[in-house]
Length: 281
Image 1 (cartoon, rainbow, N blue to C red):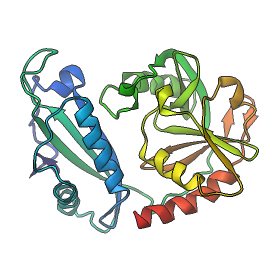
Image 2 (image 1 turned 180 degrees about the vertical axis):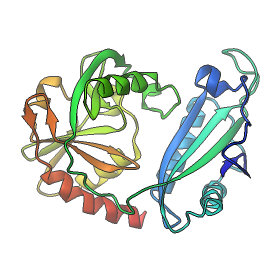
Image 3 (image 1 turned 180 degrees about the horizontal axis):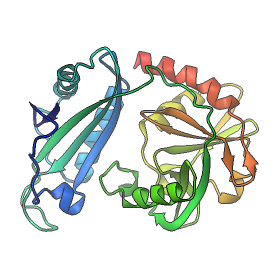
């Protein structure tokens, strides 16, 4: 079952037509959210990011879109799928209603909530080989639109095909200044000695929820210095660790980039702190 504008319908239902603006123009936003035993991880952060993104795209936010209402819609969807005692991946998609060409006839929106069971209840470190390469066919624009979680993800799609065709687990994206911005499916963190850094949003990286949470955690660590700073491709092979963050996996260590093999000591140290933060908020 999925939730379409508050109505639970079978996943086999045909409820979107060729006029859908998400399909036609990518006029859509989405949140990917982890829910465990009916507790929504970092719900306030997801909610505030969605509201801010809708305002930036000039979508009309319904009066009913309170935190409590949307939380209830998510939990109802989970219950209808008999997943209330499981770890669940929620995709919450918002799209502008049909009508118009590039210029919409309305700024009113509709939404879809999908639920899918996850394997792990907690964030865990996967120590399987995880090799990455730079994707240099296309670049991320360093502007505010790149920081939003929109449905305009063709760069990520083509990059994922490149990774699959060449036997990589992921690719790192560059902006048009040739600086490393993020991975195909999450934010990037680099560890060098006692310094940990991640690209600033001004470079064009996604305004990730896990990125925000890890920045909060790293700011309290006495043993490391944290920086939001540009990362050049040259720095990757000099780093001690590289890892990717997103709301579903948590922290994914990179084990290899070209000839460099990386450790995962800091990633292992952070995963427990991240799980603790998830349980609290």
